[in-house]
Length: 35
Image 1 (cartoon, helix red, strand yellow):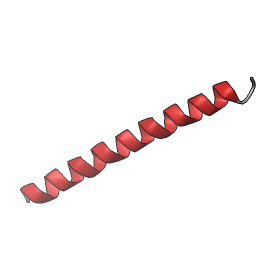
Image 2 (cartoon, rainbow, N blue to C red):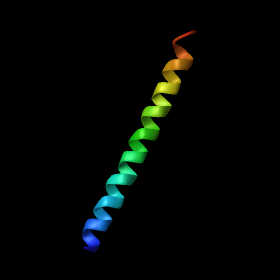
Image 3 (cartoon, rainbow, N blue to C red):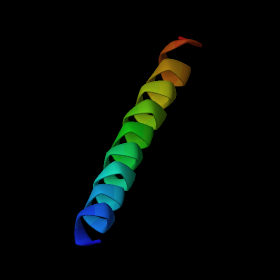
Image 4 (cartoon, rainbow, N blue to C red):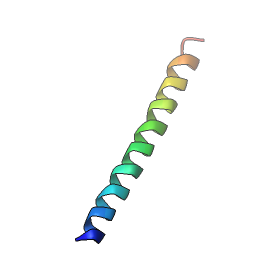
């Protein structure tokens, strides 16, 4: 039971980090594109 909880938390954390990276990359692309 604890292993399932830990796995879910780890997946959620990795997903959040990936989302943040994508958001930063997209923001950088939007800043560079008009220039």
